[in-house]
Image 1 (spheres, rainbow, N blue to C red):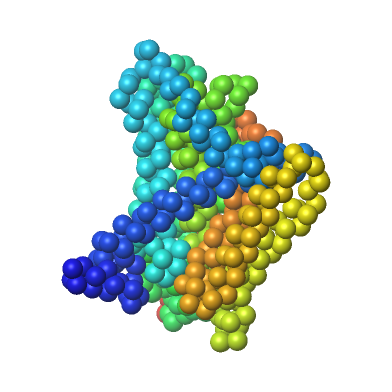
Image 2 (cartoon, one colour):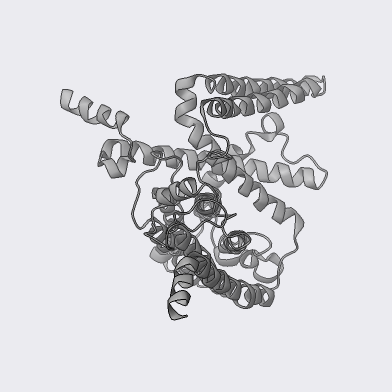
Length: 439
């Protein structure tokens, strides 16, 4: 018994991820935490997307189920679980059943290498980026399987469109990622710092990439400005297309393909595609934050350093939750004084109390130190999730020929150009030395 307790408690003083430390108990704990946190995030995104789009269009959105419709995602989940699960008579049963599982597993498995903090990750692979690109591309297999197994023309057309879209934009996305890998091999600080005689050893580790940004004193979105910004733009557009989100949601063009590759799915199996889509959105947003926006690093960690600044930034998580609690209290007070709104008022006030208690807990130094990295990472990812919703409420849907033209004729040449220029900037000291020798 003592050996088990020692095995569990030994990791608490470790400065490694559970996978790197070889502690399988904490690996399992982290997997469960990521699974639970991702599920809650998908539920929250479901509600937030409907509410934000509603406010953009000057309407209220969900309001009936729970205060301000907060329980609407739970009601939707119960409805999907209770709906009849229909499979077409001529469908391939096994493939039809496996397709949504593959899509969900591909979206969730990416989080094995996503670092929420220097030690807050399931594991730190030395080929983390390759693992991420390889696993995320497996979702194409699930989409093709779903369209083919349905034995219907509409899902098959939707699957072919979606797979062509995902494969096309993965190339531009990969070039943008390679430009980041090149930058990690540099050791000079600042926007244009190279260091030494040029490039050194780079890294494919996700945690290593964040530490490279900390070492160089600049987020990679600003490195070799504007090259880093252009690479980030290429990745950002590609990740919207990869997740089949507006304005690139051709697979779900109702006027053309009814509902795309999942037309014949219903009930719980359809909800798995829904879960996979939002999980993939969070996954690619997490990757973008890790590669270009400093991951778990707070704003200006090198410029505004020292105990005073660290203390000041440590208050921001608690203040943020108290601000959200104040918004809930404000809206609860503004609720109509009518008996039918009493439950809504009480529920919204109670939700504000919960947020306030979380905010107060975050002022405790022991708690603040442990969760501060996760807070900054989650805040950056939340910004990307808002952009997803913003795009959906703003831009019209692309035609398929426009989508392919953007991927092959615009983003792909841009990605190649950024990659070549990044290599030239990184190797410039070595190139100068070579020119001098030749002269």
